[in-house]
Picture (tube, rainbow, N blue to C red):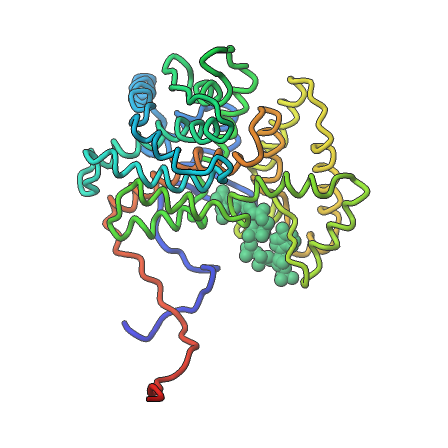
Amino acid sequence: STGHFTFDPGFMSTASCESKITYIDGDKGILLHRGYPIEQLAEKSDYLETCYLLLNGELPTAEQKAQFVSTVKNHTMVHEQLKSFLNGFRRDAHPMAIMCGVVGALSAFYHDSLDINDPHHREISAVRLVAKMPTIAAMVYKYSIGQPLMYPRNDLSYSENFLHMMFNTPCEIKPISPVLAKAMDRIFILHADHEQNASTSTVRLAGSTGANPFACIAAGIAALWGPAHGGANEAVLTMLDEIGDVSNVEKFLAKAKDKNDPFKLMGFGHRVYKNFDPRAKVMKQTCDEVLGELGINDPQLDLAMKLEEIALNDPYFAERNLYPNVDFYSGIILKAIGIPTSMFTVIFALARTVGWISHWKEMIASGQKIGRPRQLYTGHTKRDLPR
Ligand code: SDX
């Protein structure tokens, strides 16, 4: 009907769609993908298997897994001409700025899979996106430091190949550390999907218009960039740098609690979790393992742990159920892997692409109508031009 609708700014209590992909119980801190707990996926699955699960609804058989991995590997290269896009960007551009542009531009290269009404085309686009994101992310990094771009290597696993393209050069191909590859893979799993978060909702809204999947994912990347969302992983490290020392924690907590100060404790709080983000727990454990195995003693980890401890014991955070979220510890692991801070949100986008495209596929298959929120108009009533 016209005229009757609910006013719900920020979608605090509005379900925008039906979905079978991911379940969250925010009070209990539960996260399930297709029914499987995130802790078990992080421990016993690998990223490409989790991708298959998200995209198809069931775990693959050994044969389906091998087929899927091989199909993804078939699509790891990007069109050579895509490189010339990079040259249009300043070398000091933020990598997320480049990602928005380059991923959006994919629709100009892969014309053969843009018919969204064809399930086979949708499938190919999904695989292309999952396969090409590591290549594009690594290209963006190499461009920013002025090194030659590295081609993907299909004899390596998804995570090994990503680290190879990030850190190797044509003059020196070093073997990829299994510890780092495993940590990278786990970070990818932990970021793979999270139901109707702001970027996924953006992808769905863009997709509901019939826009092509590459354009929709570019919209998701743009939404993810903000510091209240995926940009928080970068913001956490910037914040830890600013705090500098445990002796300054109280001062920064006072700023976070001050309503007149825009500063927020980055990596804390969540719209849905009113308990620990289960991903943050796995992330913390991974962080301890990785730093332990690499023998790294990172004072920023000590600072983060102290900050967490003080915040969790502070009534302001307790009353508002503010706990560490997925972004709180991920940056410390990424840093240990050697990934620069400005690439953190790119890593989130790379890993989340499968979630975005799974939601896009589910939505297109369900024949959802165009998304079109209404508004509460608070402007002028009708008036005449003064002439
Ligand atoms: C992600 O949605 C998803 O699922 C996202 C995500 C995913 O996987 O897709 O999980 C990924 O985006 C994680 C979140 C990363 N963002 C941050 O870490 C940035 C810091 N956190 C916040 O800005 C905030 O907590 C949000 C954006 C995450 C959630 O915002 P809400 O649900 O709108 O909550 P709110 O801002 O209304 O906060 C409620 C209260 C307020 O105080 P009061 O006005 O009630 O007195 O808590 C306070 C807020 O001021 N508050 C904080 C705070 N977060 C909330 N105070 C200090 N520091 C914080 N971090």
